[in-house]
Structures are given as structure tokens and as C-alpha cells.
Length: 315
Image 1: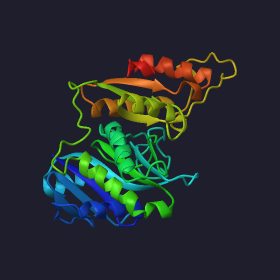
Image 2: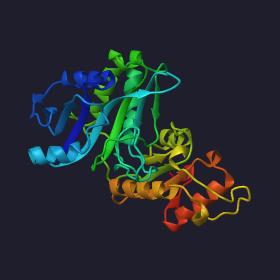
Image 3: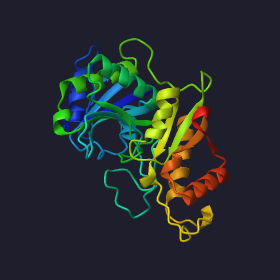
Image 4: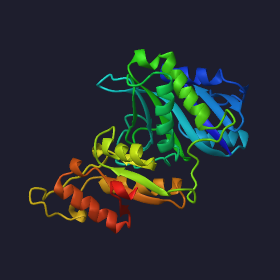
């Protein structure tokens, strides 16, 4: 079983960390296929291509076809953009489960799909903060989760690690070194144990499925910081489109409310459950981000799917 770390030469926030990672010991050249070059180190394969990071679909399947090696997980290195232009180091799952057939994905992926979320997300967020602190990037850089969004299409547990939020930050060598160190330590390339290996029988097996809130999911992240919990998909409000013809009355049932919110929840739950075999998936709602009728409908639908709802203390 191998881990793919994917970078692109077209993005300095991807190429910089990849270059810093390749400067560490143990790398050897690997096969080149379909315009993608590779480097090998233990059970890790660093792939580098010349397209946008979201444009190369099915790299896990393609690597398996070329090499016969089974892919266990994928980690993408990328830039992050934000209107605030604030320096940030981010971690997030991918998918666009709220889009419907015929919609054009703005940043890769396929409508109605969510990748398996990497179990490393929560533990790596904690490790990222520790490494950033040791490199004196705090408090200048914010360390944060992001909600589930964009592609590319994958079939194995997937994680994006990003540097934001402007070209100046994307090119920062200190930020690149932090991300490289995260991957190095997080995957155990230095000889220590990897960080974030899922084991349902070791410690807590509760997994947070975040629903609601903004793109940086602050209420869900509060729990992660305090509890160190496992993290599944994180669906912000824009990924839960709800159309209620009776919203002024506030008495509509979940069956009467249109939109793709149900599909988004179901697909994200199923992907999270598959990524954490034996785990207890708990939906955590950002209560204040929903109107009353929205919260009632979501709660009703979660009960229909037998998805437990967790409060902060439950994690």
C-alpha cells in the first residue's frame, strides 16, 4: 500500500513544498507516465504534473494501473485563495456533493460526489500548528480547516494541504518548509510513527461530520482543537442548498423542502463512514447558522438516516 503526495509545477504553493520535501533524505526517481513524473521514498510516492492541481482526475487509479501498486491515500499540495488575503495554512476534504447532474464544477470534481475524507485531517491540523509555531509562523499565519469543496476526482481517502492566501505567501520558503515538514513527519518518513493512522479500537472512535457554518467552519473547528477528534466531511451552509416553499410558516417537513441538501448530507456521510471503518459518525450542527425550519428539517433527515447528532461534549 502506497501513499500518493501530489504537486503541480504551475502553483508555487504546491511546487515549493514539493521541492522542500524532495530535498529531504531518501528520494529516488520513479516512473513517468501520462505526463506525470514521480519520486519514491519508502511507501510514499510524490507525483508532479504540469496542470492545475484539480485537473488530473483518478491519479490513484492511474498509478495502480501503471505500477500495480495499491494506493492507500492521497495528499494534495496546493495554494489557497481568500478575499481577506490573510496568511493561512489550511487542511480540508474534497468533493462537491451539493451540485447536481448538469452543473459545471467550478474547480474540478464531479457533481454529487464526495471523496473519502482522510482520517489524517484532525491529527494533521494539530501537527501543522505545532510545526508552524516552531518555524515562527504564528500568529502571522492562521491554521485552519476549510469546508469540503472542489476536485479532482479520487477514490481513496484524500486530503488537501494549502498555503494562502496571496502570491507573496504562496512563494514563502518558510511556509513551504512547514508543509514539507508536515508531510515528512505526518507520513513517518523520518522513521517515527506516522500521524493520523485510523484505528477504531485505539482511543476514541467518534468522527465529526460537520454541517453548517461558513467556509472556515469555526464551530466545528472549536471541537477539533479542544477534543482532538477525528474529522470527516465538513459541509458549510453553501453546500446545503434548501428551498422551502413554506419557510415563512416554519412548519415544513424535510420531505417538502427542495434543494440538494439531502444528497449532500447522504453522500458526505457515506464517504465519511467508508473512510472510518468501525467509527461512530456524529453529525455536529452549527446551530446558529441555520434558521429554525432549516435546523428542524436537517435534524429530521438525520434521524431518517439513523445518523446520530453530537453536541460538543459528545466528542
